[in-house]
Image (cartoon, rainbow over all chains, first blue to last red; front, side, top):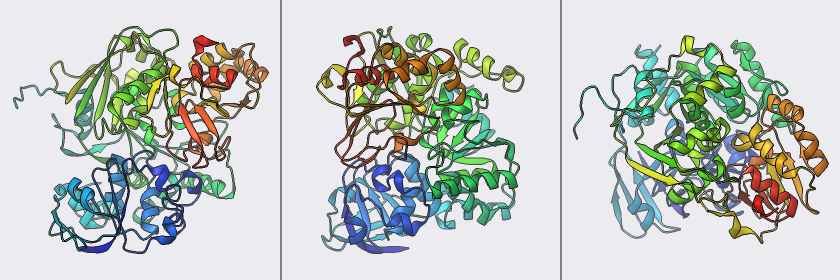
Length: 168
Length: 429
């Protein structure tokens, strides 16, 4: 699977209150939540972002609340993937469980700059920065997580498992 | 690495192993765990229910599910009422007994232990990040997302990567005004908001023996603010005393014999914190790790004070506030909002005379709700306003306008600050 998009660069500790403030959580519609993605950090972001764009961030991306609405909001805004130096654990599992591509790679997250056009190739395991010419090898996910990702998320995976008689 | 037999495990590893049906688990290992109790609230349940209904018809184990509307309740608008209706109707369809209306339940992380539903050795998941609170009862209690909760509804299980454990030992007797909140704010100021990312925090030490259950809940509650997967204490006589009051027959179904970490279990790190000379701690905007001794903030003026939440809405928190507010008034220009975390705590606070003290001081007393903690309702902040709060997060925009600021503190510091209108050490009153 290959994703190509323009990058938006953010710092450390981009928390879920910033990604989607609680005042919008009366909704759980991707489209609705996407309209307010990161607006307390940059009120223009929801307007400027384009489908297929990629978020590049620092340490501990998605820290704070467990709100899966954060992933919905990013998807709703059109974000196709998040590259970060590191992810907070609940955001990480929410992204895996719902099929938002994420890449934890310190080098890529550090070197990619705002506005760079990059390609993320998850099956072959690399990120190519078309703007700077840099290429980064990315680690494959552990087997178990790869299974979930390739099934399209946790519940599709669970359905497959049931069909195989592997869970009740 | 030498692995001896029988295998040596930390408390979290032991409990995860047991609930996976394995004799041993090691950090980094992926496990599919049998969950004893899973719960969600009015914000996290509706998306989970929607996902569940795409893939399943019947909840696997309805008796192990709890649905607690607490974030935007009493429903603050039409949409919020719709969210709770989704929960209510789902509970009815699926015969989920543990759905509670307002007035009969409170903030999930205070209500569930009070109801005796959380026991040592359990694996508990909650679609809320402060699920880690319940580690104070010797359960492995982990915050998860809505899809995880939907998976649990479908299968009764959850997937986890076994975490490394960091051992945190508190020693020394805390001084008069230092509480569990100050201890955890201090720890987080040392290790940072990702200092325990993906780790289990196992709390131990003589200090904890002398603290209350309320303090222990507060400490575990904020484990997530350092990035931790869970916080946990092994059960002792104080735990058992609490449990005997909320669930007298708990030992019939949950023997707690082996709920200790092994003596030479492997810990990633061991941190020793001597609290003898610790002062009350306050976390300044905009990170929970931005903590300093309270005296550094004595010139900071505040507009609003909140005493409540899953962090500090318990009876001893209200008692600490009442002791400071007795005979005093909230400062001119300042609002004080006090929120007992459950109806039981509310009633007990009334019986003890705390509510009169609060009303006489000019405070607002609210029905149990998470409301203002996350900028939902019952005390949202305007641009430029400054709040001091006994809650757990102070990120930009957490309690209202992104131009508002939040300081995190203990109930005693919050109450003292309400009286003076500035961030105040209780001893200075």
